[in-house]
Length: 195
Image (cartoon, one colour):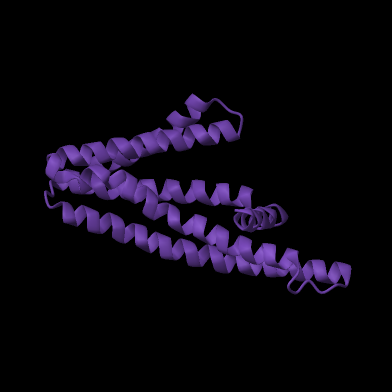
């Protein structure tokens, strides 16, 4: 038990040193928003054209989520690694010390991996949550499953907006509704285009 505690406290310390938690919140919010909108767009398009084969919407949504995951993990990792290597080198120049294998260098290396995983794994998790009704389709009609998935996407958008409102100390309800309206705008545009 004490080994586990030591393991977690070490990585919590790395998160403090690297100040990765605030960046992780930003990455998570942006990626979750993108994932909701992409998944919602695919579901709405399938709903509009009346596709009854759920494998198509599941494959399209998970295909997009996997692409976002690969892109998110790799993009965040190489960006953070470059940024953090630069910070460590700047510190080395300022202090005339070598920071190789120091807690500072280890913290920045850990932060690059941690932020890459936060940025990359959120799309696949969100797509799965939104698609639960479609995955359970034998229990529902296909069109009802699409509607339920859309409802989950709208609820998730509202919760995301409300969370941002709480962080920014603004009106939680207004922030939630503002975020929800982006989903509504997506639906209206897709219906007007008649995809």
